[in-house]
Amino acid sequence: MKQAKVKVGNVGRPAGRGSEKVRADLIRAARDHFLKRDFKAVSLREIASSAGVNGAMVNYYFGGKQGLYMAMVDELFESLEIKMGELSDSPEFTVADFSRSYSLLLAENPWWPNFVTREILFGEGETKEEILQRFGKLIAPRLLQAINQEIADGNYRQDLNPELTILSLMGMTIFPFMAKPIIERIFGMSIDKNAVNKLSAHNIDLFMNGVVARHQDPARTGEGEYAS
Amino acid sequence: MKQAKVKVGNVGRPAGRGSEKVRADLIRAARDHFLKRDFKAVSLREIASSAGVNGAMVNYYFGGKQGLYMAMVDELFESLEIKMGELSDSPEFTVADFSRSYSLLLAENPWWPNFVTREILFGEGETKEEILQRFGKLIAPRLLQAINQEIADGNYRQDLNPELTILSLMGMTIFPFMAKPIIERIFGMSIDKNAVNKLSAHNIDLFMNGVVARHQDPARTGEGEYAS
DNA sequence: AATTTAATTAAACGATTAATTAATTAATCT
DNA sequence: AGATTAATTAATTAATCGTTTAATTAAATT
Image 1: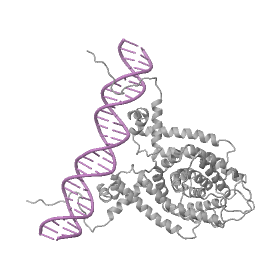
Image 2: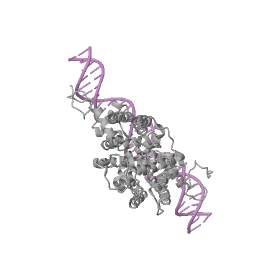
Image 3: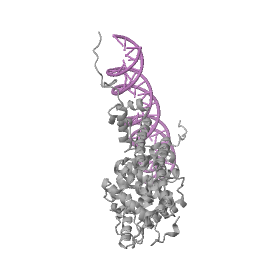
Image 4: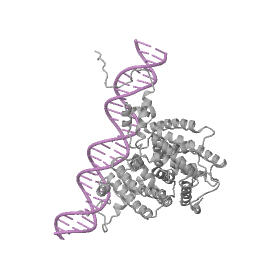
C-alpha cells in the first residue's frame, strides 16, 4: 500500500513563481558580513543562515564562496560607479566639488573606504587586482584633470606638484572616514551628516588657504558660506 | 638486555644553554605573517614553521594563538611608543615637526598604518580596544597641544577648528602610506625615502599656505628649502 | 499524464585548524 | 648518581570549513 506523502523539512523546490529572491538575499547577506569582517573570517553557513537558505545555495547560484564574493563586489562597484559618474561627469567639475560630493558619498556609504582599504591592503590575487583597477579609474583621473585645469587657469599656484596635491586632498577627504572609530573615541566627535558638512567645508578652506594667519587677508575664495 | 638508545627525530629538550631564542623567533615570525595577513588567515603551523619550531611551542610559550598575537602587539607598540616619545616630547614640538618626523617614522615602519588600520577597522573586542587606547594616547594629544599653541601664538588663523585641523593633517600625512599600493599603481609613484621627503615637504607647504595662487606672495613660512 | 528540469535541503566528505596529550631528551637540583 | 624539571616534537582530538552528493519537491515541458 502506498505511503501517504509527508513533507520532510523544507526540502525540495519551493512553491511560488520563480524569482531572483534567493540570489539577491544571498548577495545582501554577503555584503552585511563581508563588509564587516574578513573573507576568511566569514563562513558560508553564516551567510546562508542570514539569508535564510541552505549553504549549498551559494554553490548553486555562485559556484562557491569566492563566486559570491565577486558577485557582491560587482554590485558594489556598479552602484558606486553610477553615483560617481553623476557627481563628477559635468565638464566644469572642480576640485572643491570633489571634496563636497565625495564627502557626501562617503557619508552615505560608510562601508566604502573600509572595504577598499581592506581589499587593497590585505587582499590577494585577482580580487585585489580588479578592485585596484576599478578604484583607480573611478576617481584619480577625474581629479587629476580638474587640478591640472585649475593650475592652467592660474587659480592654483604654478609650483604645485599635481600628483602630490591629489594625494593630500584625498588624504584629507578620505582619512576621517577610515579612521572613524579613532576619531569618535579620541575627539568625542561623531561623524554624522552635520559633521560631514563641517569637515568638508573645513577641508576645502584649508586646502585653498592653509592655516597660516595672513593679516591683510588677500584673495579669499568665496567658500565662506561653508565655514565652520 | 638494554636497548641502545637512538634519537627519534628532534624530540626532546635541545642541547645548549637555555635562551629566549624560541620565544623571540616566534614573535618575529608572527609579526612577519600577521602584518601581512589577517589573524584568521594565518595558521599556527605557518608561524611555527617560519620560526623553525613545532606548533605546540606557541601553546607552551604564549598559551595559544591569541596569546602570541597579543605578545606581538605589545612589542610593536612598545618600540613605537619609544620612538614617538623621542620625536615629540621636546617642549618646542611644532606641527611641521610632526609631519616630518611622523613621515619618517612611517617610512621606516611601513607595516604600521596597515596594522593599525586593520585592527581598528576590522578588529574586535579586547585587541581593538587596547590598540585604540594606545594609539589614541600616542599621537593625538601631542598634536592637539601643538596646534592650540600655534593658534594662541598668532601663527595660525584664529578661526581654525583645532580638531578638524588635526584630522586634515593626519589624513594628509598618513593616507599616502595606507594607500601605498593604489598610489604606486595609479600614479606610477613609488614611496621610497626620497619620495617621503618630497611628500612631507609638500604636505607642510600645502598645510601652511594652501593651493590658491597669491600674486603678492605674503608671509611664506620658510619651508621653501623642501619644496618639490 | 508522464517526464524532465529547476530549486532546495540534509547529510556526508575531505581538508584544515587550534589545541591537547604523550613521549622524549637535556638541564638542573639534591 | 638519581630524581626532577624544562623544553621540545609527534601524534591525536575535536571543531569547523567549503564543497559535493543524494534526496526531495514543484514547475515546466512533452
